[in-house]
Amino acid sequence: MSQYPIDNTDSLIEAVNYLLSGPTSTGQNFEGISAVGLDADTSADLFLIPVQTWYTGLPFFGPLSFRTSAESPGSQDDPADPLDPDVYYPIWNTLPGGLTVTSITPVTVTGRDITVTVTLGTLNNESAAPWTNGQVVVLSGITPSSLNGTYTVVNYDISSLSVPYNTVTLRSDIVQTWAAYTSGGVLSINDTFTQFKEQRFLTGLQAVVTITGPTDRVFISSQSGAISVYTYTKFDAIASYTPKVKLQINRYRAIATTTSPDSADGEYYQGYQWQFDKSIVDLSKIIAWDAIGSEVKVNNYGDIIYNNVIDNPGIGTYLYAFQLSQYAERDASPDTGAILIVGAKTTGVRSFTAQAIKR
Image (cartoon, rainbow, N blue to C red; front, side, top):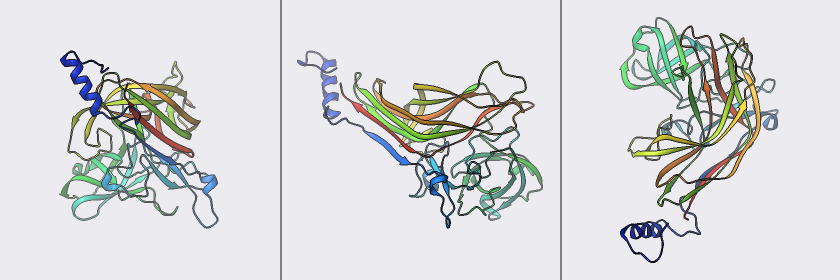
């Protein structure tokens, strides 16, 4: 902490940093976001299709080039079936085996975009609208093999329940002359998640602060109202533990500046490259499950509120985020067992703030 009188070089440096970082009373580097989720039960209208607010699992609503002013960070509003509202959410993980591809058509013979049609699953409560702009998907097992690869979902929009949910436009990283689709193939979302490791999903509730002194602290508040998490479980052998999902506030450290655009996976954001640093708050909730994997379960966790969380990260630039995470198991072969978060929604107030305070 800076002190008076200044009697050495270190004290001088601390004093200058203290002065440059701004007045103590104002609380420098304040950042945050707030929004209100939509509930199909309260938004239903005789002449309008009811909608609900779904978390996308992305740090914001896809790359900025895919985003409109009406879209809230980390979420999208999709129509809901009044009789069964819980079947229209963007998928964070496809179930084991992925989605079977039935056709691929180039938007133009030479270009970056293709239109892909898949067969959606029939599990109870499995999403009938799995897409969100900025989502990264993988095509594999296709003939010809030149169509295999990693793509980004673009131009996805739902205007009515008559939209064919099994069709989506995908964009390649490069311009190419497309070969004609012959047969086969699987579309997978987040299919690289195959090992015993923690996977963290961003909700768009996040804030960036810069710490200039070793004793500066960060005050964090987070609220996600009426949150529901959609999960799928199937065990090849009965597990000896109860599956859980974690509702966390995580800290990321800026490890480099960058001119790269904001990325859908959150690695690049606001001109920085980020690296996971630490979980500041870690609340575990039990997942509803069945051993045979017959349906997607809805886990209603209510309001998740963290007030006045205090952190002292040290000098640097940090991103704090409310995230859903889990240690999930998915068999690499025969790819039949899984514990997966497949989506989440909110119908209440959601907000997140972070503020650096000098001490």
